[in-house]
Length: 161
Image (tube, rainbow, N blue to C red; front, side, top):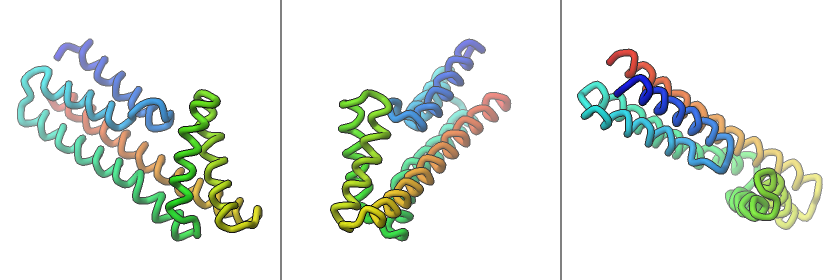
């Protein structure tokens, strides 16, 4: 692969990493797809396929952790999984009502309203919403870390080949 092609792969991976933080882009999938393209562009080879296997494993682990850890953390802090689902639904609705920032506003509103409906106490609902928000933040952090490790794996493989 030419150096220009590798720069393009790296740029796509960085865009994917940004996609972890911006809900418009499929973050880890974009990093994974760029890694696949890099692997097969020149016919593969054992080292490229090995690197791609590691990239795939990191992507799967990051994606699973993104959903499992927040649900466990939120449940342990008193917010049920249904609250996270309400937050996700609020984020989707908010995104279409107020593009881009509406996802954040709608997600927070969905979390709070679900907890207020469940607890009938604004103070407790706010505390539970904060716990759910912390859990979501942990999920994003884990996914971001997986993305960084995927890119680092690719970068090491580029230098090694």
